[in-house]
Length: 119
Image (cartoon, rainbow, N blue to C red; front, side, top):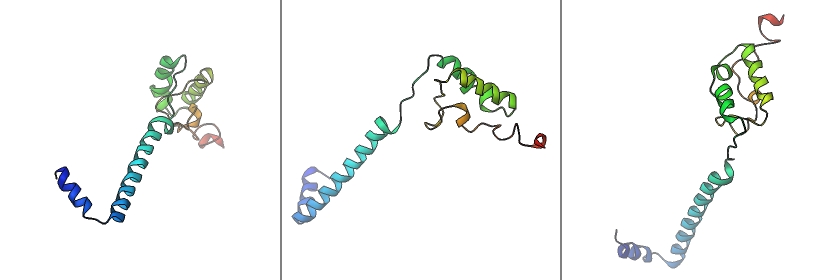
């Protein structure tokens, strides 16, 4: 459609209907812009690197020991690493997860007083 044709179609509606359509379109656009702005600015907190982030990433965030291992030794070693680097966290962790122990640890609940050896 050319702009003249669209204007002719739009002006064919009564004034009250044109106003209602314009308000709905404006409201929808405003809500969409606000949603995108909230997501980009305040909805997702920016990740802040700690002083030892590079080594923390290697040992905690990307190692088999702290991501896939189900042995008690792995879990306690990773918890000790987190204690030594309390200000560090993995960028891939959800915003709510502040520490290693807050997350979904592979061996969580399967060592210590659980399982066959707890009896």
